[in-house]
Amino acid sequence: MASAGSYTLSWKSKNFEVSAEQILTYTGFNASHSFQTEEKKNGKNMPKTKEIAPGIGSLSFDISLSMLQGNDVKSEYNWWTEKCEAGEYSEIYMGGDKFGNYKWRVTRVDIRDLVTIDNGEVWKSCTLSIGFEEYYIKVQLTKAEKKAKKLQKKAEKQLEKALSAKNENDAAAAAKAERIKQTRDTINAINEAAK
Image 1: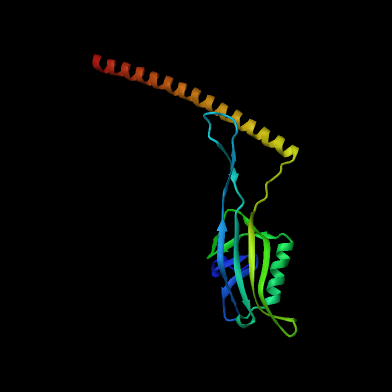
Image 2: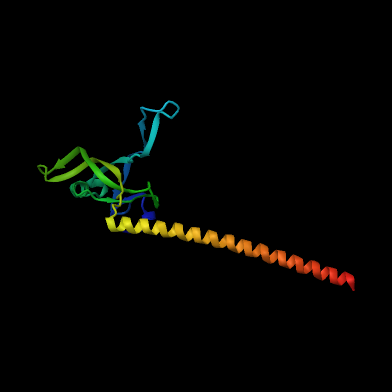
């Protein structure tokens, strides 16, 4: 894929741009994010809602296609439909910046206002509505990985405890060294005064 910053919007290999060869732009960009909650049924002094997690984001936009803009209308429709049916996902970039926290999966491809010529063989123009949902993979650990993670946490706690004890011992040794130094300095001061 070319640099995401050179396009107004890009997803996978599809780059929305205005060039000498074609005009491929989008309109009606809409995005939605939410937070999931659950109503609590017990507890008198507790909040009535329980926070669950961020909801799955969604976004959509329209693409106006026309042979007059240099678009291969039927190929564009087929490309988006194939990506949708395959459940493909990728980051979306707007103006070079990643949009959202996760990747986006095409979940809907709608076609409207289709105009054809040559008995329907050539698609002259149409509008596609593309819908996306946020997509992320929740990593499922194997039993061995879970055990290794648990052992790692235990080892980290033991190391932290050992370092804390060492720091306490170091602090005690430093305090003792400081007392000895002060005593020596006092003795030296007395000896100097006695001369």
